[in-house]
Image (cartoon, rainbow, N blue to C red; front, side, top):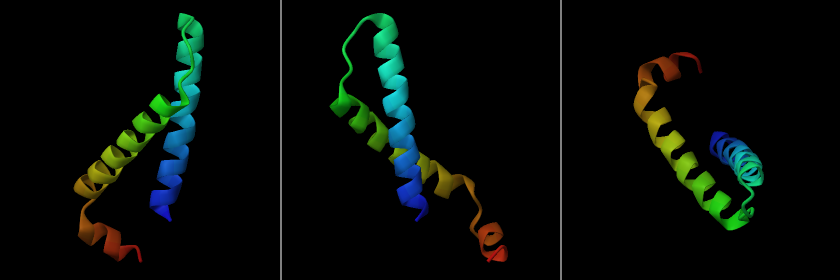
Length: 62
């Protein structure tokens, strides 16, 4: 479930940032570009989250 919510919020936030930045620069909003960036950032968050959180501390809380 954490993967879904991470992808969901990353997708939403990247789309909002892309829309605002493109509007400020007078460019066009590209949904596909935002979707690709959101997927890439989600994968990076998954990798960094697994690398930075020690496994023994995560198991103690369950």
